[in-house]
Every structure is written in structure tokens, then in C-alpha cells.
Image (cartoon, rainbow, N blue to C red; front, side, top):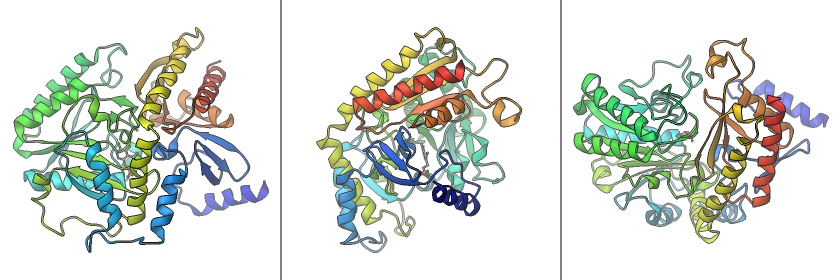
Length: 445
Ligand code: PMP
């Protein structure tokens, strides 16, 4: 309608150009797995607001708990006093922790802030400065988080200098290491662990290295699960040198991968675990989870934040934890995941599509399809050479949107990511997969 398009024009005029935008429209409402746009379009949402609305939009139990809390206490400042939802949330999270040593909690608003807090904690308790991060990593947009981000220069271009003291380790992902897609992860992991030994002897000595930060599943950088043997190798090296292991579960946590936390696939103990996104199903809330023995070394007042651990967000997160149990969300993730992999792998059986599909990977409902770049181009070309055609993955995503499916790409690779709601129905998942298949067929035709 014309009033809708004038609203969009108004937004384009007055909202910072620094934000990207995928849907040309104004969202009117979100309900379960669907978004309604003011112009009447109804979109099946496989983006979940970038892995956030894991229980669907406006889950009645979560929104209900938040509404109720709104009438009791909105802002209970965490440096002034405890508030009920903050403590109830810890009670709910304790039994979900991937290791019993994780018993000390600090809530903040965003994933980026959690990353900042983890760096501060690691530096403070080790008395060391340097942080090792992974090639392809994404940790956020504040200065410390930008400094440990390695997925795309768009996040830091023009914003330097960043936090100093960051070193980069190659990540065991075949494409990034220039290896064949079927290279065993054990081989890739062994290579990267050797590189870590070199890094610690050539660039950042253990006595200067506070922490290694890694996503259990690389998110923005391409949806690549960290191989368990790699994580176990990191744990061993950290133990040997007194380096802390920071596990970023911001995108992979709260059932997204079919377990409460993706780190459970390796059995590795994090020294610090970071959570956000799915934690509160859309309310701004993040967590820095560590062990009391570490956080007891902090001076009172050294951590804080006006809005940190907001009462409404915490109340919503308590409801999320309840719903995950009551609605057996993990079971649904694992059932739907098998269906999703079956549908995506079937595309590889289609002789027309098979040559375009390099990889289908992921865990649970954090799954990606990586396409081969058009002949004569590399996946990175888009960012250095604007004359190459638009990336295949972006064209597929746009085509999906035209057909009513909101789906996202990742990073510099030709990758589409599937992050549907964790409680999505069999029918809606199948519908999205069908749209995706049609879109791929039309784009590669
Ligand atoms: N870490 C990871 C793994 C993420 O995926 C993100 C967000 N995409 C962040 C940190 C930053 O979180 P936020 O956007 O809430 O600051």
C-alpha cells in the first residue's frame, strides 16, 4: 500500500545507513514461525532474528511472563540489589550447564557485552593481556569484540584501531585452509593445533596469553561446527599453560544445535561460557558464566552496567527455560534436524543442482548449505571487485524472500544458513525447504 511504502521511505531517510536491511518493509507482527509485513506479506521466518526467537515470535508463555514482570518491577539495578528474576534464572540455568564447575553468573544485555566482560575477566584473573581468536570468528561490534572478530572486514573497516593484543589461529574448516571438502576434520584439527603450538612459541608466549576465545559452532563465519577433537586439543593446551578457554555459545546455545549447548558435543569444560540470543527469546539479555573461584578474584564494582540483567528480560528467560523442558524442544530440534538434512542432501541427488552444492553441514537446526562460486570467481570477490555478479547465495536468499521465505546468508562464503524456530512444525519446515529448492533451481538455471 502507499502508506506502507511511504513509511519505508521515511525509514530510509531517517534511519542510519550503517544498518543493512534484507526485507524492504515494516514488520507489523510476529507470531510463531511467521512475520507479517505491513503491506500484507506473510513471511516464513527461517532467520529467527539471527538465531534469537528460538521458541517462535511472541511465545505466549514467554511474552506472558514478561508482561507480568512488567507490572511488578522493570528495572532492578543489579549493582544496587538482587532481584527475583535474576536469581530464579540462575536457578533454572545451573542444571543446564555443560559442566558443574560453571556456577557463577553475570547478566548483561548483548552478546558483544558478554564478550567484553569475558575479556576483562580473563585479563584480570590471569594477569595476562593477550587473546587468541579464530580465523572466521564473529564475536560482536564493540571494540574488544570487534578486535576478536575475523569473519568480514565490514565490521571493522574505518573503525580502527581496535583493542590490541589479539592473535589469530587458523580454524579447522577445509575451505579456509584451502583443502578439499572431504578432508577429515581430525587432519584439519591436528594442523590447527600445531599452528597453536607455533603461535605460542613464536608470537604470544603463554605467560602473556590470557585466553583463547572460540565459538562452538562458527556462526556468522559460515556455520562450521568446531570439531570435538580440536576443542579437546585446545582444552589440553589451555590446561598446560594456564590459559582460559572462552566458549562463545551466543548463537549456538539454548537448544539450537540439538543439545542445550553445542560444547556438549565435545565434552569440553569451558572456563568462561558466553550466552545471549536464545536465552530470552528476543528480550535483550546475555550471560557471562564462569566459576566462583575465578569471579571471586574480581573487585566489587569492577563489573556492572545500568541495564545489565534487566528484570523483564530475566523473567522472559526463566519462561524460556521452562518452555524448553515442558515442550520438549530438544526432541523437536533433533527430529526436524534429520528432516532438514534429508531435504538438503536430496538436492545433491539432483544432477542439475549437485555441482553447485559444495557442502551441507551443521548441527541440530544450525545448518548451512555452501554453494560453489560461479566459475571464474572466488567467494571473496564480491568484497574487492564490485564488477563480479552478485553472489549466488544472496540471489538464492532474495529469490526465497520473493516466495515468502526469510532466510539469511553468512560471511564471505557462498553460504545460506537455516536457523528456523526450534519448535517449528514438520509442515512449515517442509514448506521452507520446498521454497529453498525452487529458488536454487531458478537461480542456477
Ligand atoms: N557472538 C556470536 C557467536 C554471535 O553470533 C553474535 C551475534 N551474531 C555475537 C557474539 C554478538 O552478539 P550481539 O549482537 O548480541 O552483540
